Length: 222
Image (cartoon, rainbow, N blue to C red; front, side, top):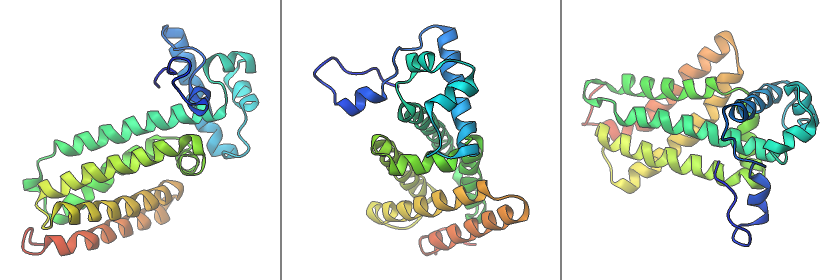
């Protein structure tokens, strides 16, 4: 997370999201990471509304005062978690950028895309509550918008490189639909279990293939 700007140049909201001290030392970095991990686990247990810095500090084995040395409030902790998750999203998209698409049929292409993104959602504890907070908490909304813009940009490029027919504007529209579809249903998949989760995942892949199908005609035969 970036340091707070010099006095007089940043907004009050941004200052409230800045950590109390930059974790330069290994011990401080480990403590910050522990706080984020504890918070993620608590989100699954109690949800965002019931989450408090008192609870986070207690579960982390530290005092609230010590917690405030690292994060000034729970929104700052969520902000750091969201930034961390966005880095994982970007890493997955960077991997997709390097794929050799020529060998993939449409079903294989969709399967590979969805499975790679699913891995990012599965790896993040408390993902449903984190995403809901990114959308609803004003201090985190910019990160939600950053996520959407990042996925749309990279998937527009991926669709073009795969050879989908359409103008950049049309492929961008498809990429936005792809974002809305996969983002919503991947959250469902990771919060279901067993056969229900597998069926939802299969439905997502079929829906994604249907979304891309008009742009596949005459380009990638099924």
